[in-house]
Length: 293
Image 1 (cartoon, rainbow, N blue to C red):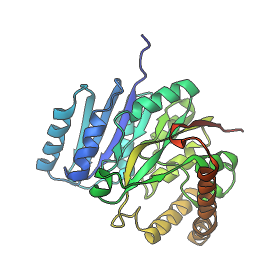
Image 2 (cartoon, one colour):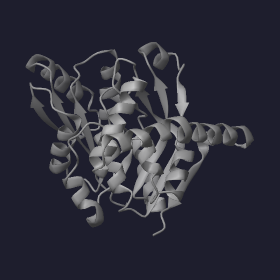
Image 3 (spheres, one colour):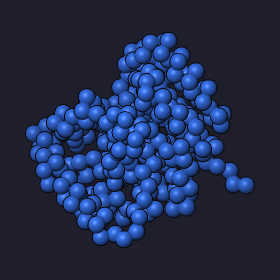
Image 4 (cartoon, one colour):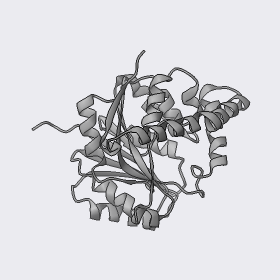
């Protein structure tokens, strides 16, 4: 029997138990893949809330996954939390999962099977989007596809286009650790929209990226959050470009506007055209893209 490669599940969380996190924590700790370690950084909650989360995880840990927990009463930025957990991880692969996103119970199994088959450096998937718990429970969610985005990323990796919008999902994405990207993990950015900056650096140090079109994770997106507020998220994105490229904010705002007003609608058009003309069920599709030097 082949030895399963270890996967480190990185979970920054400043959220106590609630209707969404209870489901999220349950499906994280009950992943069917049998060689994972869960690294969680609880912060911004009190000690009683921390204890409730830990007890909940341990109670539901039916596969006896290793759980490593860090705690800070003070709120820690997601970038700093992820950096701490990455440095403490021992897996050959890293998968980031946010505590208010809900993974398929086979998320890691599906992605590791495909990563091994295709020798993929990164494995993404489609996702469901919900803004409240009723949409999730009654399956009234919208599907967010990343096939066209990854296709554009592959074609235009060395151009300015990957700067203009976020082409890759973060939560639920599986990433292989190797010597070529070791320094990128060790210097995980502590900045707003740090996941966007991280992947911008990472795409220049990988050879293969794969996509499973089955929605394997459900993203909680609310207008109350920075991600859900379209105006504030654009400003957030522009500042990240300015930080990453060391360019004036004025130029990064222009890039962001180009992405929002032109590139994103173009992707939307290609996505809908693809779904219209494809005869098969796209949920069963799996693709790998090879980056060319």
